Length: 173
View 1 (tube, one colour):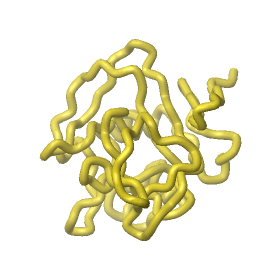
View 2 (view 1 turned 120 degrees about the vertical axis):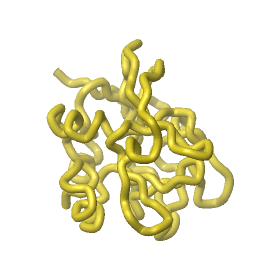
View 3 (view 1 turned 30 degrees about the vertical axis):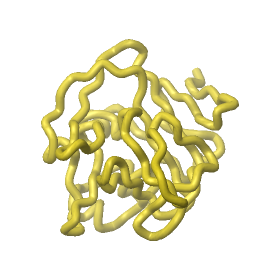
View 4 (view 1 turned 180 degrees about the vertical axis):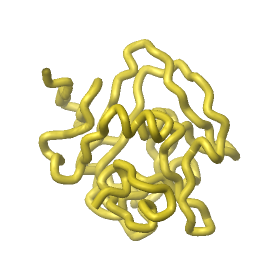
């Protein structure tokens, strides 16, 4: 059964599977075991504000394919925007300090020291009522700035992330 539905808004809406036909080589399939081991699906809540390449910000829920975003290694284009519906259920999210974004507890965050940490180590996870969580595949850079925090996106393949946090959907080559 296919749970992916394309819309004219440029997003790929997904209820269960974590792949996009257009980005299948970059977007990794997340197993329920991996998500459980990492403290939940690795996604963003929709209200965080993403830094854009040309300045300004845009809410996570409004990012769509083709939008140019800022990354630490230079501008990148959103290749795939994933919306995973929660279907009226609660989600466990960790709110990062200082007005930071809400992320799933297992989501990797790059600290100013250059080290990676999981969101749960930075903010206390709590159950939240939300309609969806989001993640993205970028053309390059693979790190979004959301509310001042550097958060990895899918398909990154970073060896430093793998070395510091172990295998994850973000650190697989």
